[in-house]
Length: 406
Ligand code: UDP
Image (cartoon, rainbow, N blue to C red):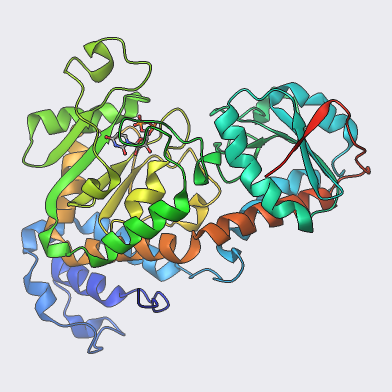
């Protein structure tokens, strides 16, 4: 695959579209006369459509103006998340008693003399195994440490609960003090569906295959419709499903079964749809991501399709989400967006093909360049080193734990 050039926002395309919408002559705006800004782009957009969509074009122009590409080296794009999550422990450090106080919130692990130990029981064995892949990999370079890793979907340390201690969780909102770690599903233990019966794991394999497909897919050949397949893990998905039922020419969004499915009520009173592989998702131009119980694992996969991702809601985060910027790498959608608002956004995208194509390219590049498996391993390593440096005690081997071997 060819190396990617450093991201340089093509603000000019957006500015030309905005000028056209508000009847400003191109020469009145500085910096837009570069040969990179072919004036025929203007003609692709009708005056009416541009006025209607001006608010989105302005948001894109603002985002491009403010965007600073991140540092590529050594998982640097995600480093601020580690500082942010550990900030609250900086002053007092992490004591043995603070870890003890949150013991019931997850599974206890230790790294002692570069060996990994865990409580005998693990609530979700394949999730623990996905986590241990990274712990074993990092252990040779780590000092002794002790930590509690939550393998449930839900974070454990609400900010306003008055309860406090270091718990590692894969996903959280700003309402929680959990420390985010790269999810087990980067290696194994991801959701099992009929197409991926052993669970959606092995991000290294998915990334390579989807990245290749995304890079070779032709934008012009993608089906210009919004697409979503998934189960009803959150009702925020309903508006798109209902829009698709009313306007199938605009969206193909259907609910599939998950393990909790009992009747058609769980698929909004329609029979469940067949599951669709990530590769098939890539045939569509507009791909939707929603939260599930917490953040959904699909975001990183669909960004590799080089389709435009409509990311609904910004509340639920994973460690790499802050590096993804709205209107640069994806189209942000309010989590309470109505069918009408979704329709307007999809129509905006179809009226501004060049503009959203650039967003698709940027989203692809961010994941391809900065969410490599080595970035995930690097994040784990940095996170654990920083965490260990905050410990105010020297962990001693807990004989109740068993050694985990690779
Ligand atoms: N998934 C898929 N094809 C489908 C349905 C789901 O690839 O037809 C994937 C989806 O992208 C996600 C996982 O299966 O990574 C679980 O999806 P679901 O919607 O059931 O739950 P979520 O984890 O998103 O809440």
